[in-house]
Amino acid sequence: MKKVVLLLLSFLLIFSLDLFTPNYASAASGFVDIPSTHRAYKEISYLKQGNITTSDNPDLFAPDAPMTRAHAAAMIGKAVQLQGTPVNTRFPDVPADHFASGYIEDSVNRGIIFGYKQENGTYLYKPGQQLKRGEMALLISRAFGFQSDTTNAAAQEFMAKGISDGVGKGNFGTELPMKRGDFAVFLARAVNADFREKALQVAATPMYVNVSEDTSLNMRTGPSVDYTEKMKLFSGNPVDVLYTVGDWVYAKVDNITGFIHGYYLSTDQPAISNMKDPIHVTPTPVPGPVTSPISGKKPLNQLTIVIDPGHGGKDPGAAGNGLREKDIVLDISKRMKTYFQGTPINVKLTRETDVFLELSQRVQYAKQNKADLFISVHANAFNGKASGIESFYYSAARNPNVQQSKALSTYIQKRMLEAWNLPDRRVQSKSLYVIRENTMPATLIEVGFIDNAKDAQYIKSAAHRETMAKAVFLGTLDYLYHFEGRSEVSPLYSKYNATPSRKYH
Image (cartoon, rainbow, N blue to C red; front, top):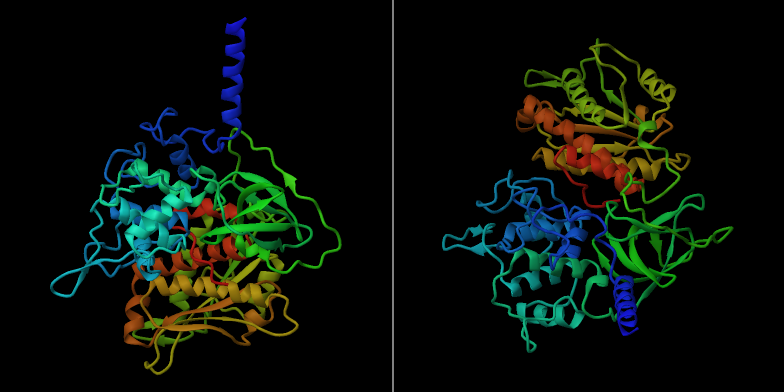
């Protein structure tokens, strides 16, 4: 009888522990050296699900290996949605083709990470240098908006928040070297309070879901669309925001915690005709396809983007430095088409050869093909004295697509500036026929001044035209991802070694 009772009690204990343990590791960790029995299995699996982990070997996490400054910058950057696109950095020891260059540069821009000043006045980043525990705590503190500004203060804050219980007797071990497995545990706890050693004790900020009444908003287990849905929320639903992680918030609804994209929350309750109760989502053991945080959108394979290479035929457009606008923009547009053809999105060009089209024909083509977005590609000229990149949208009281067109122009402009090191002539409103007369979100881009010597160095280079085509493509993805809330766009970036931009609109 005693054995039966003991067995029953053991079962109940195991069952109760499982109930109160965050269920973020139902899938494998994704690394052959992180079995389910590993002490950091759940945290590493959680970060892996959100594509936050980095590793020199895609099959190994190497939990006992040193945590380097480069890998720390990349993992923290991914967690708080920094810009990860490879870029030229200010550090000579971090070239543009370094896997963490984008995250390192954006981290420096945001005051998260700094370099080491040399005797000659230059700075090195030292990407391969191992972090110390105190340095790790300070980096995460800065990235997540904590209050600490020294390693000792960050260490104390980590212990107070339950992110770490130290190494014994109230000692954090700030000078001890940081291992990759320990770093993953601390980062997962910083992201998601469900993993922490102590219950979260912060004052909640009341907010409300603010989406269209015919759509819903997903609460997820982590701060990206790669994480599992927990609940569907509707316009007007109250939300208690506890803290932020990049563009996402960790919040409580109906006594359930999870992550919600902050763009769709408002401090004022929206006026709605009918308040719908949240829907609790039962997680499936096998991950399904990534869905949008906003439901009710047209699927990607039903979207059509029309690209409009300017001029053509008897109209050469601008000219300079032995170049003609009509040739250059057609080449860039064809390259853009190739990128879109690698996605489910439908893409069409108003012209694919050197033919002349009236402006009205270009607009009519977009309307006939029921385009969802319209991008007109051009190059500038101004007596050889002007330089730079600019984008235009049409703004008028009767135009229902002003905000969409402005956002599309903004995201493309940001990417074009990253692609070519030319002056920013900004996003501007202008009454141009092909964007004024269209009935969908539309932008007209000017990739540079064809008669300017510096701009022409980019324009005449096939390699640079390829970079520009990719930039406009990625800018369009950024618009769909950020402005339209299409989370299903997220997997498309990795195919082109890219990540979503910051949110600019």
